[in-house]
Amino acid sequence: DAGVIQSPRHEVTEMGQEVTLRCKPISGHNSLFWYRQTMMRGLELLIYFNNNVPIDDSGMPEDRFSAKMPNASFSTLKIQPSEPRDSAVYFCASSPGLAGETQYFGPGTRLLVL
Amino acid sequence: AQSVTQLDSHVSVSEGTPVLLRCNYSSSYSPSLFWYVQHPNKGLQLLLKYTSAATLVKGINGFEAEFKKSETSFHLTKPSAHMSDAAEYFCVVSRGGGSQGNLIFGKGTKLSVKP
Image (cartoon, rainbow over all chains, first blue to last red; front, side):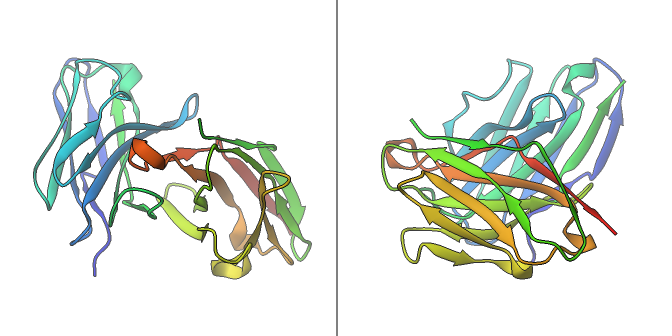
């Protein structure tokens, strides 16, 4: 079975542009997580979904960030408008359930906002 | 509340010598604990997981970790380091309980392996 798939793998954009990151979780997994990783702040949980419903978005930095999960096999993280401080690696992860379950990470999207 | 502390931000060992990466946790209940590894420019990969079964957990690539409740520790060890072990390692505790179980990551320990 394929692992978590993320696209694009790399994104370079200019400040003010809209950025959309995509994630396909492992088939059969009920939970999906979006993380951001930077040198300064380490790995931060942005939002997570269970059965396509957002459970906790308290990690979303501000209104410029939004995430959707229209179905069990697809999720997007959108930044509009993007800013240089959004430059980071964004990871998507999925797990079979919630409490204590192993999360399986995608390869990440490396975002650079100029 | 649950938390995890990785005691060293950077550990350097010589190839063939033992590895010890230290982790302490805080949890108000019996936690699930994990170690993940991240190689440069890669995603995170699960090394091993503790879920209240055996206190000594064996993982991939020769790594193991011992859960010590009295010390609230979950240190990661390997008898003999290999060059390919150079990576960043994250100790993780499951939030669990009523908060639906998302993971809390430590700040990471970067392992360097010298020839």
